[in-house]
Every structure is written in C-alpha cells, then in structure tokens.
Image (cartoon, rainbow, N blue to C red):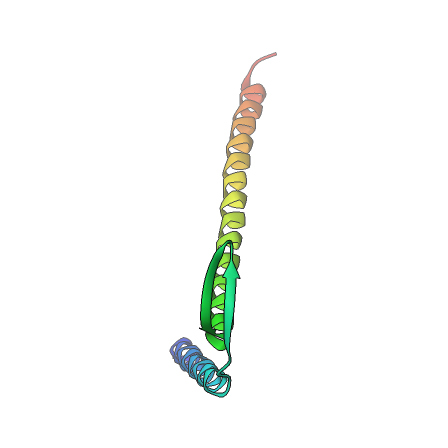
Length: 102
C-alpha cells in the first residue's frame, strides 16, 4: 500500500514540476519578444526569437549531456564485463592449480 502511495506521489510530483516548467517557459517567452540575428558556421539566421533560441540551446545541451553520460556508462559496463571475464579465467586457472597433483 505504501509503495503504491509513493508511486502516485512521485507521478503527481513529476506532473506538477512539468506544469510549473511549462508555465515558467510560457511566461519567459511571452515577456521577452526580442529578435536577434544569428550567424553560425557561415549560415545566417535573421530574426530569431531570443527566448526560443535560449530554450532550444538549453534542451540541446541537456540532450548532449545525457548522451555523453550514456557513453561513459556504456564504456564502464564494457570495462566491467572485460574485468569479470578476466576474473573468471583467473579463478578457473587457480582452481585448476589447486586440483592438480604435485
């Protein structure tokens, strides 16, 4: 029963946080109407909305951060598997040495 309550509480909390972020973003976009010209790698983008540019760059940065963290996790898991394989082979070798007659 308690786990179910905690599950609902987390879900409601996540929804409330998402709604709060949506409201803050809507207020930010509506109160800042500045248009800027962006020049990036030889391409020119005239008249972009500054709030949208900030939000998009924030989201893209978050996604890139998550992807880099995912890559680090995948490399760590690969290293763990490699070390477990090495440990297993050494354990087998040790067991073989223990059972061999001298």
